[in-house]
Structure formats: structure tokens, C-alpha cells
Image 1 (cartoon, rainbow, N blue to C red):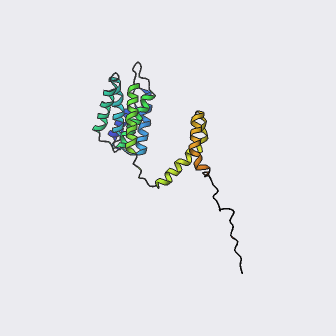
Image 2: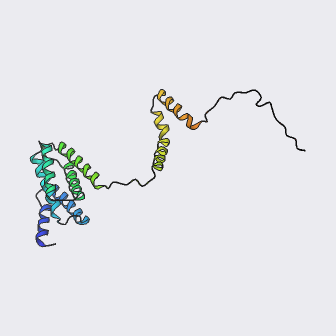
Image 3: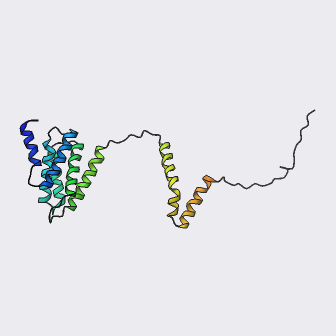
Length: 192
């Protein structure tokens, strides 16, 4: 790393605000550890600009989050890099008091954005198991929880469910009628 780069990075962790410095330093350590950013200063710049945007536009949470998203989009980050920045910003906002500014709506909107990014970052899993096996596993889990589930139901509902399950447990009883000549006529074969 060049001296100018080191100087730029240190400017984020050596401010008058000790609380800020602590978060910026922890973030910088994680940036260096993960190595997912080519320019180490980019996430710190976004982190820094986020607080400025949110404090300035705290009365317009949608606008604030939109401006912050636009800042992130300018940097052309991949989904994991965006998620990294969102997580640190959310963590900082959650654990920081901004005097008489209520940033709760902004925090909630950022959490939603973070959730959306998490969904994007997780690859869609192909259906590799046999559907029948998956259904069997699901049914097994439900059957294990059945006693607890039944306890929570009203007696009429519980009885209804038990009646529906009964044919799967007890054999079906069929009526038997006696017809003329059936059981009484035994033919005895003799062997000569």
C-alpha cells in the first residue's frame, strides 16, 4: 500500500468522534481481512457519506435511503460488497445516538434493502432431492409435532383431525354377510 493510500485510510479512523473511529477501524479491519474490495477506501467513503445523508435527510427517510443507494450504485459494487456496506451502516445506525434525530424509519428501510441484497446474494438451489423424499421428511417433522399441535386446537377441531387420520392407522372394517351354502359345505376329498 502506498503512503497516500495509508494516509487516506487513517483519516477515516482518526476523527474527533471516538465512537465513529471505533466503527471505522473495525470496518477497515474486516475490509482488509476479507479482501473483497480492490480499493479499501471505497466502503469507508460510503460508510462516511451514509451518516451525512441520513442526518441531513432524517425527516425524509425514503429520500435518504434512495440517495444512499444511488451513492452505492455509483461505485459499481457487486451484491456481496453492497451487502457488506449495508451491514456496517445498519450496525452503526443501530448502536449510535443521533441526538434528537429519529432515524428509526431509515433503519427499517435499510434493513429491508439489506434483506433484499441477502436474497440476491444467495444462489437459487436447484431441486436435487427427490420430491417424494422431501415430502416424506416434511411429513415426518409434522408428525413429530402433532401432539403439540393437537393440544393447541379446540376439542371439535382435534376430533375432526383424528377422524380424518383414522383410516391411515386402523384397518377399514367391512361388513360380512353370510350367504347360503358358504361355510357349511365343506368338501372332503378322499385319497384312494
